[in-house]
Image (tube, rainbow, N blue to C red; front, side, top):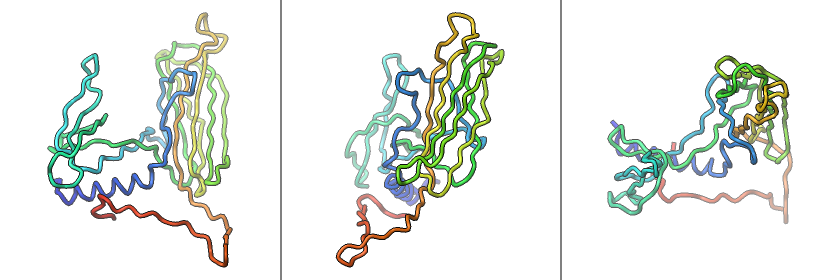
Length: 245
């Protein structure tokens, strides 16, 4: 059973995660000026997925919000922010579920974080023309906490699509270490000039995937002013937090 204590812990953990991950930037997107590529990324054999952060308040009830075509585009939910079981506000969420008997909604999504190591990458591209050559361009960057480019890997090659109009690229990898803070995997492609007209030279789109690393870094530097060691000042967050583990 999902108890009130479990709900408080979920809210508390959610807020703790939000405090840690709220600075994360864009998630997955097509490059500016390019169509989104029909593709799936696998990291160490697991499909790349964004991490959903649950809403920290109590959700009393939700109603589906349809788009002009009648499809559900989100949910309008009444929420209780102070724990008195009374409606305080209405929030809109894209993803909600009440299969457990309690409404649960995703507040936001953040990119995944990969531990230190050498991670294998596989990219499947689909919905292409069949049995034609495609040029692929793959770029992978990693960055440390000083904002510098700590790693770079690239691939340019030509592959032939299958009879199902697919290609699979599995020669890529990304290396993260403890100082890696974030990275980006970028892929774009086009039909080779040998492809029949009017396909030859046309784009098959592009895609970018973001990720984060451990971001642990020792600069071996200290600053003193007026004889005092420089230290960052922590800002505490207590509102709405019942418990943390």
